[in-house]
Length: 212
Image (tube, rainbow, N blue to C red; front, top):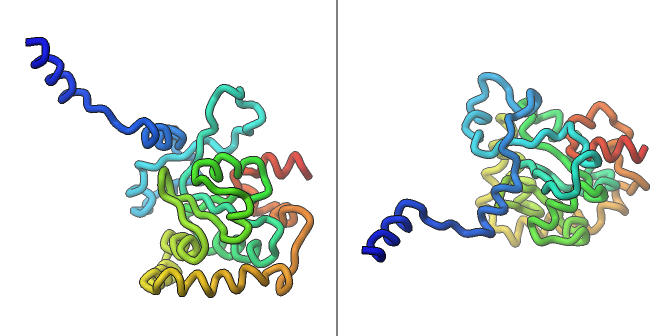
């Protein structure tokens, strides 16, 4: 009789993977901010399973005992690279539904995203990072094409290039990435500070403002 009851309890309350559950809990389940949701957008409505944290709250005022809440669809990139900065500005202009957010690799706000993906800063200096959500991230050419997939047409159509084998795509990406400083230049600080109108799209904006 006791064994039968235990089996019944196990069936009613199945156990889930603790590591997977922790990663999902790191992502906020608060309501989206107005800048995150555009009324009438079917794409945004379909993605309500990945909600946002309130990025307007500075991490400096949060108690150290409270875990940092992460956000989905975040690009972590080399903030001092002129080529990378141009790419970010282009995405912001094309992303009229404000689906994509950004974070400079050189900021402290990037650290929890790196830990979540098991990456070091040097890894992202070589190949930028796009975190779609819990347990789902991409680098290099795949990251770029996945970002494009969230943009409106005709830009999202370019994500069809994912059918090209990854080694071939990444070979082109790596060739440009290794030479980007020589070809396009490098700054001392995160370049977004020179374009303050872009700051609202950055999850590390409070940190950048304080630093400036």
